[in-house]
Image (tube, rainbow, N blue to C red; front, side, top):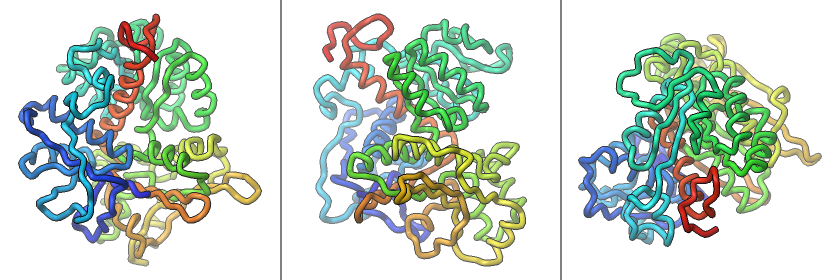
Length: 437
């Protein structure tokens, strides 16, 4: 099985055959000049990418293709010959009722269901992007509260009922879902625990908050009939969490290897083109992939947290963070890599030993002849899962940046909306009146 959200063309990348049938979009009747409608079509496409499908978009929809590219979804153009000749095609109609199963239309706001009340914690690069999307799609979402460090700061364009730096006041807005985009792990974990304890679902992009606590947080969510979704915490716009879950359903996972940090991958790509280390770091910061303080990326702490999250997803248990062997990216290591030449990647590796123990590492490896990893350039991430036996599952996509990460958040939000449409109505749930389980 292969998943290729970033269906590559050029740069020497191999165009992997997508899993299953290719979906051809029939966009007749859609107003692609409407930014909200186009954004929702991209979310629909991303949903199929999470399921391991590929989407073919007509050449008559360049604005949709461009937005997909910005999000990290390189759609297939049939006229350009990028679809395998023996592919079979289904027809999808974006978010129209004809493209959805019975009852699934209720998950998309067309006037048939109430809006999802969403509160956003952190209005930085990712949280701010999510807030703007919520406001743009006001027919489907009610942006009811924001949790920030400075509540009285001018935030022109962001109209929200409640802006506060107090978690209790934030949750008093009675959101259905909280988006955790906080930059601090400890604060994020307190927020997630508080929300789940109240039966409020959580969509988190905060890997430092999740790493080391996923088992407890998942149990808390189940105990309080809430959802904990964390696709955006690993892989950015590449659906690594969903791909890992699907691989686990295919068979027992023996191990995985991945590039999990878009900033480091961006720097390694720049080094390969002759850039100096300090200049490559600065370029990653200017591109919006690296923080002003890039130490979490360069030290390997970011990749370590993501590896712990994937271990829970793949094996149902988290590896001890202290047991992960990490090689940092220093100026000296960068010089060694540059002098050696070739294609180098930061490879995060996780496997279960014959003794049943989990073993993990984050180290730099040369991957010249490995199409999956060598084709993951700049901010791209790549994942290869090895199943017991001979099975392989592969996935690649944009692993950093506002647009891909926000799209991943909205993929989780839409899953929560779809699930809510089929749940019986009771206090505190999102289900529609009269819906059946």
